[in-house]
Length: 355
Image (cartoon, rainbow, N blue to C red; front, top):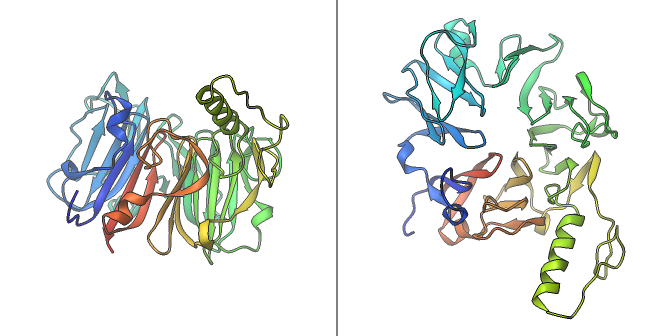
């Protein structure tokens, strides 16, 4: 690629194509100019554009002709939540098609001004999900700045910088120091007093950014998605090295310890938020969590990724997983700075501008 002007790129899983198809960043040119937002699901994504005859598209394994008054979508593999100019509607996915015909599975009328300013999944009085039940109320005392949906949990950033979480907690993804679930929003006390500006929820892990650019992360670390020592990755590397060296046997020093001069305990679950040391002390301004991978954008416009890499979703042109943050070099080589990142379950979408 030469003389790139920036824009959105995709790496990782491409529905119906071999893994190799997702190893190199692919521009989302077909979505047209003015792309504002990407809403990913497992096998397809909603592409939200700034105006045009078709402001919202579906791209990937599920196709649909969305109405012209569609403002935004929240997709899942079973339903797609459609935000229209005067209503929210939940429509079922049937096979590889979303057919908006007949009566929706769920509908909630909205005032046009509320629809125009809605920042999904937040809506007046609560939040929505792309699966039944579609609407969930929030306590009126919570002044919400941002809300992120994980696979089984929810994290909420208040306007004053406090963090709340609830839902499934069996992988420590709530950050309360235990593996218990919560039915109501509960303050994450470990971060109390730390003003936060961003929050993300993945499959079974979460992350947040402080005002000064510190990145905190917690939950499940099975694939190194917390950028903490992962036993499964260490065993995989040892197995690969053993196979490459023939009869020369390699083994882990201890079942629960990493090898090397600075042996570290493997972390499978981190139930409290952990401060992550970014390479070169970089400050973070954006973070996103996939099913089992994480991506962060620094204040200098660099992209770092880590965790599960089976489909090339880490952007390093390989399928290796990593339990350490790795800088995505291609955008640097192309003279592009990264300003936003959105992780789908098996994909990563990157918004770039010329440096």
